[in-house]
Image (cartoon, rainbow over all chains, first blue to last red; front, side):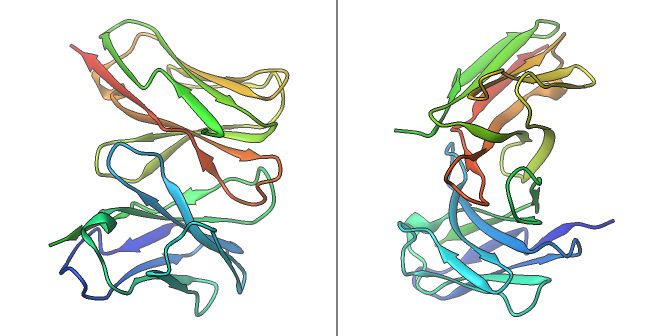
Amino acid sequence: DAMVIQNPRYQVTQFGKPVTLSCSQTLNHNVMYWYQQKSSQAPKLLFHYYDKDFNNEADTPDNFQSRRPNTSFCFLDIRSPGLGDAAMYLCATSRGGPVVGYTFGSGTRLTVV
Amino acid sequence: SQELEQSPQSLIVQEGKNLTINCTSSKTLYGLYWYKQKYGEGLIFLMMLQKGGEEKSHEKITAKLDEKKQQSSLHITASQPSHAGIYLCGADIATSGSRLTFGEGTQLTVNP
């Protein structure tokens, strides 16, 4: 089945130690998104790639970076995780444009110790 | 203020009761999506609505997008414990481009 896969499901990292979360898709969608969802809050868009074009949200901290080496993969890099970065990170894809639908992965729950 | 307001924030119902969750936008909606999320898990897609007045149903869940396309409601008939979770509305909002904006979610508890 075509899908969006996030690895790992659970990630524990040390305070200040760089960590990378992975997302892959078999849908051949143009757009890939990274959302951060803290406990009891709505998912918040960090950035997205439309093909190779990177779009950063204005309030996304510099500590968060992303890479999309090809259509299928997108990575979220947190350069120096702080305790406040503990959250569920959700990857999503779409074909692009309004009202085309979004497909979400199962998420990666990040714990910072 | 939030672009998408969901109400109520939390809801506790007895099994078998009907319930409604609302999602209101401050801007015109091009598309409205409903998702369900179990605690600590990813989002499960429920329904997508795009035309004013559109109504979709899946099993005991019905969602409607109002004619003026700024509000949606999700209605669950004869609720079951399996319906428990967080319900999130997401929207393609005018001027936001190709991205999904979310409401704060509604935490639903169904007591047996």
